[in-house]
Length: 107
Image (cartoon, rainbow, N blue to C red; front, side, top):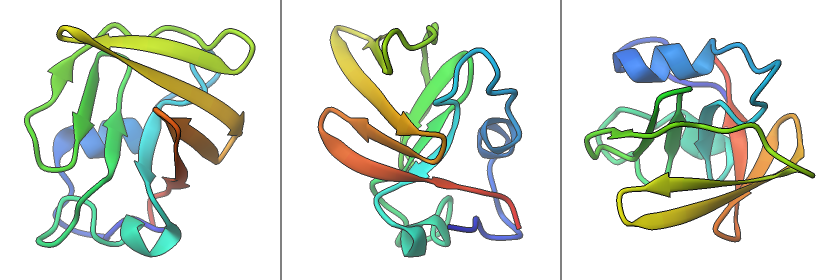
């Protein structure tokens, strides 16, 4: 799915253009391709913005996180006092705690 051309937050732009050679799940993710068009806009929900140092769920403030490379396609990321399991099944698809998500790209 394609992100909106305007109105993206700085961490969204960083995540969308991140170097994924070491950590493949960096990027912007949404439940489906249509939802990619609502990232950082009114009505946008259930999306994830993952940079090498932060993870943001929807419009919440970003959590400072130390992202780690996936091992056998999975990574467990500590966010505060909880852990989030990210499994990457392909370059443009992940599951986060069992919920499927697709990669959002810049226009």
